[in-house]
Image 1: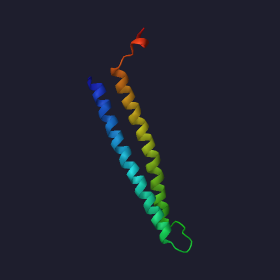
Image 2: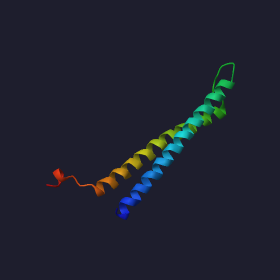
Image 3: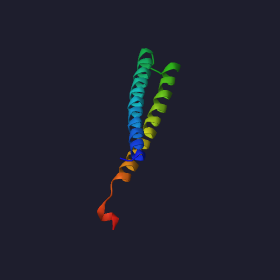
Image 4: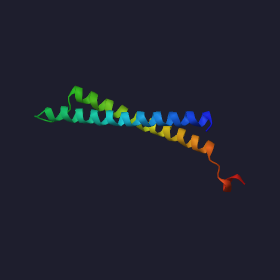
Length: 90
């Protein structure tokens, strides 16, 4: 493989690892926010700390989506640089 495609595959793998890590962070923040609200027994409203967890959850969600899309683009470019479709070459 060409170094260009190798580098893109490595970056795609890194993006995948980051996306999975952000998914776990999102899950953890959701659990912590729900736990904070559940421990606020009278009205089950989120606390200030719970709202912070929700903000981090939202940032993790949108970051995960962006990183995953970038990883897919890197992967498609790497595959496209190595694969030729004979029907399209004419």
